Length: 179
Image (tube, rainbow, N blue to C red; front, side, top):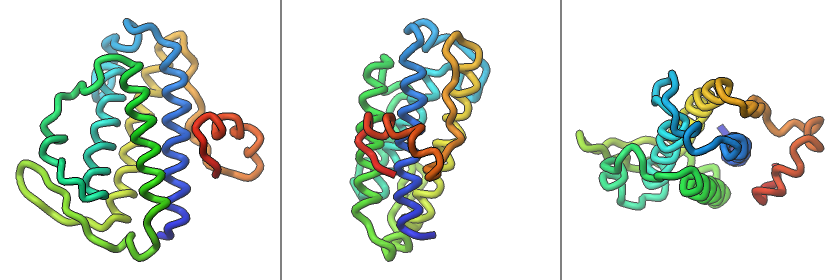
């Protein structure tokens, strides 16, 4: 695992969240919170879960000391889509900045992950890999739930391929990222 790949994954994570949130912005509040079939029973609760897990693992990565406080938050820290949208975008910016601020040796450094049942240590590289897979998994669930609405689910299975650069240049400008 190289730091450059981790940085690219962080940017791709932010870009994918941007695409998904843009699509979800087209839902009414009732559609956004409507009961649907998935692990979490609505788009709203699934997006809140993604955000909560971002906050939790970012805290571990940055050694912020808020793990138990974050772990104890309700499943719905953001009551509206507007609140969630702003919070997720801020979380994505912080994660990209964190990845830009660490070096290759940091990927092997262990940090504490604290849960109510105890404390354990993981490497920064493993925690980041876990976080990115977690996000992909739950974004896929939101994508599937969107398919049951009038809003077309966005394409999320892209990466920063050179041939596709013109297709995503505007979106990357919208979130101030360069691949």
